[in-house]
Length: 170
Image 1 (tube, rainbow, N blue to C red):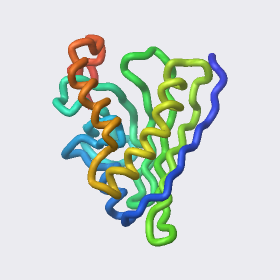
Image 2 (cartoon, rainbow, N blue to C red; image 1 turned 180 degrees about the vertical axis):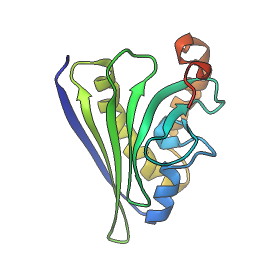
Image 3 (spheres, rainbow, N blue to C red; image 1 turned 90 degrees about the vertical axis):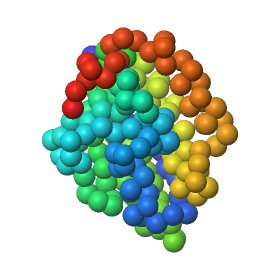
Image 4 (cartoon, rainbow, N blue to C red; image 1 turned 30 degrees about the vertical axis):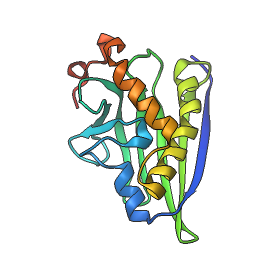
């Protein structure tokens, strides 16, 4: 089994605690900071399964189980990419009111060292915090991130069949 480690990403956001919480836990629309995925779950409570699906709901990129939901301060869940056979890790989002805004921290725990999951999560962590900051402060992701979302949409036909949402119920 690979060695496991943690990674932490942090940003200060000029927004209210409640607004940032609402954005990272929304289930009614895609979340730009989460690579334009939509959270699908029956309930936002510990023990509930969740899936992060494409905006059209046809593909599921991530599955997990909610570990903690303490509004508006902490949301944590297990995390497994559906396209990889790697072990799951845990992600935790911590929000702290600070200096008229929010200190947002993304912590990835039990990250399997040397895996494709590690590579994607470490690279994606910076994008997540930066995109969340941009969305909360300007109302939309950066131009580069919007272009990336367009590429995701154009390349959806190449998504592995095992990532189809019918294979990943919640």
